[in-house]
Amino acid sequence: MRRRVRGFPEKPGLRQAFPCVIFGVASIPDRTPAFHFLMEDGGVWWRAPINAFCARPDAPEVDLKDLVMWNSFSSHITVTVFEHMRGMAMTYIDRHKQKVNGKYMFTLDWHTPDVNILDTGYSVNPGQHKCGHVIEREDGNYAIQPNNRVRLWDPSYTTKKGENLIDRLINETLWDVEDGDKWLTSDDHRYDYEVVAKKDTNKPTEATEPTEALVVESNITYNNSFYDQERTNEWYWK
Image (cartoon, rainbow, N blue to C red; front, side):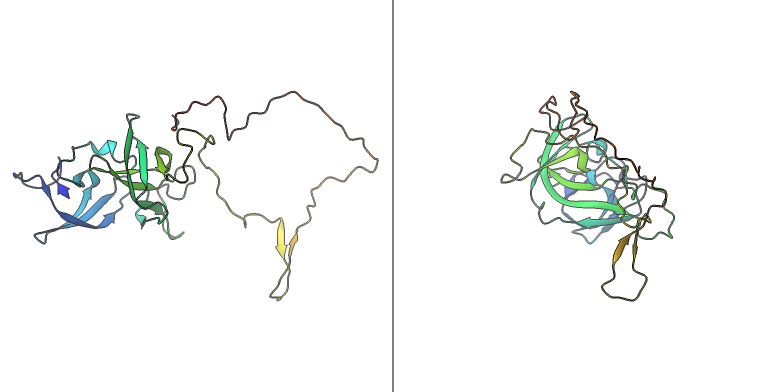
């Protein structure tokens, strides 16, 4: 349903909620994702924020900043319903560190489709990129939240609720298997070409005299960054 929200251009009236069909999304950098919708009188409206919509008329009005964590990262956006996640229970942490329960609907993701288009955003920066999962909250509102603010629940699989199995860090790596010159393909027209390692000419010459193996015992306790035994059972991190 579409409802009246403060700041949206319309004349005041008595009715506060109207049935509608959302059929599109707009992605403008530095602006919250906005949605296009059709109403029962045939009216078509463009670019309404997600707090302009609700699943039922009695849904309480919630500030947009408590529904959406980030603005759009690019003008290029995809909308995907992940089959494995469809309809699953999803919980997120809002800006006040309160847990909000709901149900997964679909995912918004941003990208830059052409290297010849000037990229002024962060859609392909591994340390800054974020997607937005659209969630139908239990109170009837809708929210858009990134991966690090949500938890997805599958009764038959996510059986370790309340635990932190690994201490997750932000990915800052661009994964690329063609960014070096340590290997070469055979210089011919064979279909089943070979891949050979390139010789490292800077490798130091091995010692001609035999050396004894040095065994060092250490009592250092190494901290496994993927699991911290002292971590509390809070399932979100600050």
